[in-house]
Length: 233
Image (tube, rainbow, N blue to C red; front, top):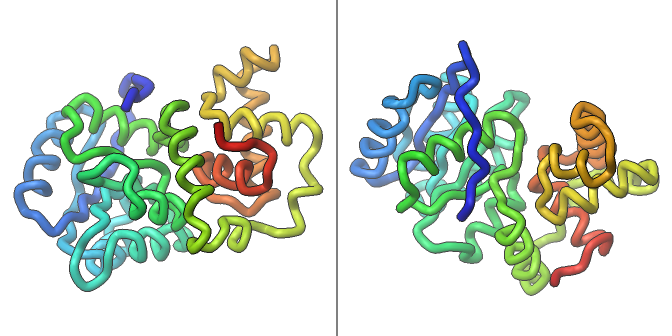
């Protein structure tokens, strides 16, 4: 996966919680992330239930969430964390690229995913991207994900959790921005495409999320495909 490189923000420390039932994974990621000047691992959890409790206790910015864990899996834990009032973003950890569990986790509210064999730089950049409110989905990955989403008819549509009456409230420009989000473009790329300031695009994105009752860009992308604004390639 190609991850957009973000430089550390001066004076900004990203608080991370690692939820994984394998001690070696937790310890390895802790060492890698704590070596970064702008990232601090504030806690660990060995299952989904403990992850939820730690989020309430520690208020992390980002949760690295394994999907397959005992007691409560990462999908259900992600759903509960996404429903909380806090701003914790969930970054799913998976061994297999684009398996069905990843789709379900993204539908549950995860902001993106990383493979467990990601490099230290990819891991740190992934945490930074998610912490800054972006979706960790490269354009090629977004298209593959949505294509697979369309095959999983047994999974409830994201529209069931979005605001069902809000779609018609989007302006023409907001709808255009939503389509470009679904195509995997960043705010800067959308601004360049539409020939407007990046700050203007940020405002449009915020309004789209509020009107649709969605958590982040990842869910907005899925919503756009399921609403047939964009069709899988």
